[in-house]
Image 1 (cartoon, one colour):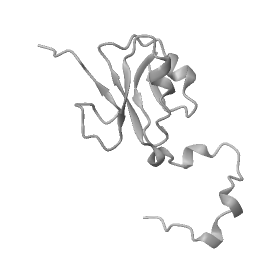
Image 2: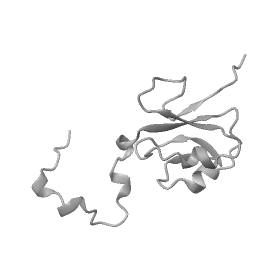
Image 3: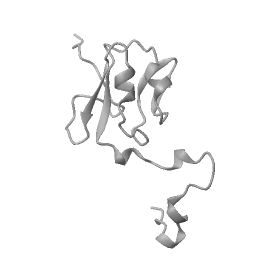
Length: 111
């Protein structure tokens, strides 16, 4: 495990001095609410990806596949912008709602 920096080693005011280093800072711990997406309702229109200010919507093959919770601050813009209301915000302290670790779940049971 890497040793944490001491306060004397940090930039004054916590400034980020190097450009393009946001990926190194995991900010998801600030979150109060986390988004969950119902993959049965999601149409993969990617409006959530387009409007996410933290670039935490994971997309593969043109489809939304979940969230990068290390960087999602839980702002809820994805849930607000979703045209089919496939995304809901739940309290971070709530237990599992049968979602995988990427925040995806299926509302319809597959038989």
